[in-house]
Image (tube, rainbow, N blue to C red; front, side, top):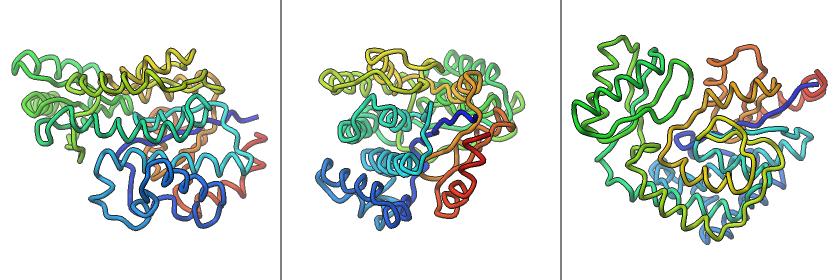
Length: 317
């Protein structure tokens, strides 16, 4: 029998209208969006379905918007009989994974990620840092380029997202990132691409956000995850509620070990992956780690209908 894991996307996956087909067709999704409106005290559903791209790029709105859409998607699938036995999320997506694992209540996660988004934006003034994706260069060479750039420029630049063995995102202040990407080009990177983000996430420049998040987590009820959730910080499953809290504090200023997390799930016997939430970014990255495992997204009604039609075959393989 297949072993199912849910994949939860992170910031950057958002788009206007995401999740609307779920709201229109499934009561549990409608309830999830309505809960978000009530908890946050404004009509985030209206912003998600009918707002502007600019609205959804505001980090403190982006994060609860993606969380709401992803949790709605996960709940629809669970109601349809797709019960995950494990989960992983990319940065913000880790919160959706923990909600699905019943480690954090959805309403608490909503207010937490809204504040997290604000803390992350406040940590570095806009325009003072950046993130760049390095394609076609192995992680050791990217790490060496970052180290050399730090030494030469006395600035901040580190690998921030290990998306696949040959796709690493670097993050830091402008001077450090510019120098590191130039070095990566010199040693054979196939492509470098600056990301459209509002701050240099997952580096030590985000330390002030980590401190503020720690204060918010002090009084938050966190439980042991009921299914394995792979930590971005360690690439291994959380073992306790205390570890969840500790690693969420570290996560905003630490690299995301995404492809290592995929490999860990595969090693644990997971062979069936469904990306819940907007787009299919994580499915594309999973393919770069292992093309043999079954993976699909449910970003559209057609995606979901196809998954439902194949449910019996997939779950009984």
